[in-house]
Figure (cartoon, helix red, strand yellow):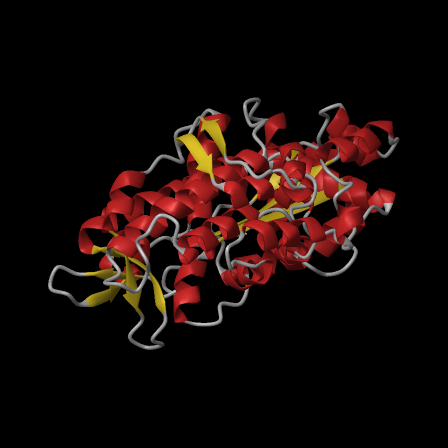
Length: 399
């Protein structure tokens, strides 16, 4: 018998799920997310960061409904405003399922699938499982798993493009949830922004160049969107690219390589892997890198560049790497590159509707956003016995 569900969430309060959503939540791909930490290795640095991908996707589903409602109300009939409309249920289902393809430790080890795929492709493969297909067949009322795949990957028309932007765009519910959720559980305030004001000013806007519908804001919402962008910028610099967390991520990747462990791309085998199964194997391993994680004995930082390298500086640093690996031994060094655009509002063609009705690209409507620089930083970690020597050598070469 089908049923509905309600969840008490520390970010959004009560989150209600209809019969289809409840069936999807009870499926193996969704329940597996209870055992995948949202922030990978970050809890070794931020003790409160024990939250899971499961709680995140519930929040994203909830916000997808809120953003849909706000957008539909301002859409002049483009979207159906009924609470049980096809498009609203579709975008909530897509939001709920969007992260089911994450491997253990989330983004920390995403590049180690058996084939060169990303978690988005794994998500699509899991949506093809019989239990997911059966949930849609019984309770979807015309929504199919394939419709969700199109929202997540290849929108078929302008309206699907708009729905896709709600789940996976530059102004999407994924960011809206993880910034507030990660900030709360890490015990920081960097992820705060004015969600209610942002929702109040969001509306669908038609790109004058392509004719595609996308999400934008009224001019009165520009500062609220700036707050979202700034929150994301600080969360990356202070939390996601935390110096110690990155060291543990590197040790994890090197341990997986030592073990020859790759995430299966066949859905049934993939479902057997989560943080717990991986931790169990790592604790039994004698690998240098596995034990560095288990015993919290990461290689210390020997050197780091500034936070905003130019292209020339990046090339110069990369040219130095082989020299130091040859001198100190590649096995004694770990090198991370933390790189991220604070936003891609220009490339994604996100607009603000000005008070006079004209559309302005967001990077022009906001002088602040237009001047944010790309994050691009290298760090070098070294084995404990040579860390001082490595740091001195690199500083001399980099000076």
